[in-house]
Length: 245
Image (cartoon, rainbow, N blue to C red; front, side):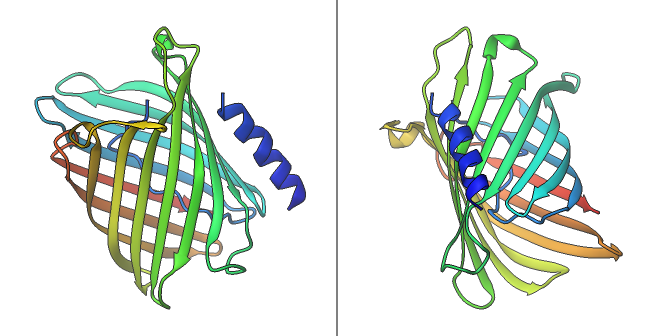
């Protein structure tokens, strides 16, 4: 656990040197499964006011390297309006579990991402932030994440921006669970935008895990999000499917 904490601190310090949630973004959870391998597919589509419809997808391969560290590499794609789908970026995501599951009232983790856009004028995108998860009741689980994002070595100056994610889930049965998700951006982390310039969206969500063999399962979640502010897309449909093996 101490070595994991040192690794986390080192990566976080690198990050401390433009947060906009894409339609395929998902809610991070702080737990790690040691030895788990997964193929991960995400998709989302959204229509912003006055803009063409934007769709995004990603395909990733991940591994639980230690009991406290999960790493994954993604290829990310996007499409705007009637344009062709194109490779948008390559991303390296690392998630660290900082507390033992259930040891404290709140489970805590940290996510650190490094992304290289195909448009090199955007430089390198770094995203990091704490992840929180708690059981509100025996059946209801809550998540809250705070995410800081910034571009480095870009043609335009970048500020560190703040976003958030939240999730509520009612654990009905493993195959299907119900709840809600929300995403938002407030602007620079220490100088928030006015309320009409912030982006907030939320809506109902479904979750589930379907065993398909020894140590294999299909895990899914999806949400329909409605814009809660003028600067957010009117409607966003997002989904994630994982093959765990």
